Image: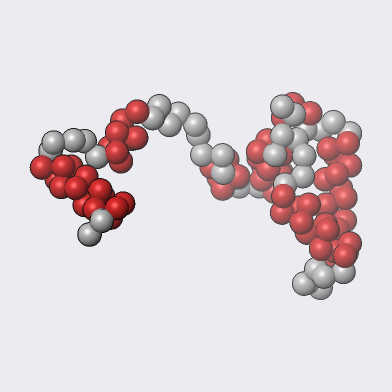
Length: 109
C-alpha cells in the first residue's frame, strides 16, 4: 500500500490509538453553534393558506418562491402537467400583484 491510501491508513491508526484527534471531531468542535432557526418550520407549521403564503414570502424575501416561479414558467412554456393550469396561474398572478402592491415589503432584505 502506497501514497494516499497508506497515509490514510496510518492516520486512522493514530486516531484509533488516541495519538491525534479525528479531523471530523475537530471540525465539529471548531464550528460555531448552529443558532439559525429552521427556515421551513414556519411554512410547515402554517395552519391556514394565508399563514402559509406569509411564511413563504418571509422565506423568499417578499417575492415568489422558486416553486411558484418554476410552475409559472412551466405553464407559460406549455409543459405544465395538470388540468388546473388556469387556476394555478391565476393564483400566481394574484400573488405577484400582492407583491407588487407592497404587501410583503417588510420581508425584503
